[in-house]
Structure formats: structure tokens, C-alpha cells
Image (cartoon, rainbow, N blue to C red):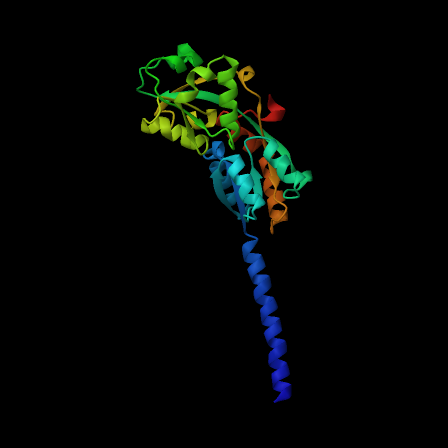
Length: 263
């Protein structure tokens, strides 16, 4: 009986080890990516292409860069973080929440003023001056407290001395995607959104935009980093290498991003 018990104990340990390896192997076929809302369309295309090529599933979670940073600091199980700026990734690095050696500037975002396609507002000719048009009751922007595009919008309005005149008409979206939704739904007449939103399939028919000159706001340098507590760092690193390929650069450029080494 003792021999049988000992044998069963050993078998039990072996089976447990086998199941543990199987579980690790299964989980390794998936990485979880937190990404700034301006990447909603472009990164979905990138992820789909990567899944076909590698067999590794890429789960995407979009939000404002600041909110995602807070989630990572609170232990959210992300493997990779794409921010709409470089500051949030550096903040994570300084707090030991991201790997410094993995930091990469993958794109430069562009800010546009966007309105519905059937709007009577002459946004293309008036540019930012449209903000003081009597027909503009609400102006949508991403919340500048945790969204880089929101801070860029504020900077652009201050650059032309309009911020104080229109501050009481601003409506804040949780992120830049929600700012676009406010305009699309009619809850705001114009909004500051990412060029990537304005150029996304389905959005081009819904709105018209005016691109804000680069000098009107600080450059939207966008950084990606591997999260320190990732359980799949090798797969995360492979995905980051894929992000640096010409194929991905082409996709990002198609959605209005500038690729840093292709200015």
C-alpha cells in the first residue's frame, strides 16, 4: 500500500508539472496590448496581420494613455503599452513598471479639427477661427488631464489666443475617440481629434477636417514599451520588432501618422 501511495504521489507531481507546462505554452500564444485610442483602427490592422504571420493572438485594449498607465501601475495584466506620448512610458520606467531598454518611438501623431460632413461650418477655410463662430456651441476634446491629444488641443487653442474665449464651451471626452463620438453624435459641433480618426474607414464619409499646423502644439511623439510584469516578454519583444518593420510603417503612414525615421 505504501509503495502504491508513493507511486501515485510521484505520478501526481508529474501530471501537475505537465499541466503547468501546457498552461504556460497555451498562454504564450497570446499577448495583451494596451494602446492609446488614436491607434484604434491602425493597430487592429497591424495586429491582424501579425496574428496571421506569427500565430500569436494580440488582444487589444484601447483608452487614454494616462488611464492605461494607471491601470498598469495597478497591476493590469498587459504585456505591451502603446502611448500617445513618450512621457507616460517614461513614467512607468521611472517607477519600475516598464523595461527601459524596450522604449521605442514608433510614430508621431497629428492633430486635426473635425466636424460632421453635413455641417455648414467652413472648417477648411477658417481653421481654428471656426471655434468662435456663433454656430459652435460645444467643442469636443480629449480630457487633457490624461490624454496627450487633449493637451495638444489646449496648446493649439492657446497658440492662437482662443482658449480663454472658448474654454466654457469645451466638452471633455475620456479619450480622443470619445471626442470624435461627441461630434459624430451631434453633441458637439467641432472636435479636436487624431488625424488617424479622420482618415479611418467609415469616418472619412462622416466628417471633414482641417489639419492643425505642427508648430501650434508640441509634437505628439508616441512611444511603446514592454510592461515589467509581463509574463510573455519574449513574445512581447517579438511583437515590438514587428512594429519596427516597413510593413507596419506603411500602415501607420496610411492612417496619417509620421514614422520617425521617415520624416
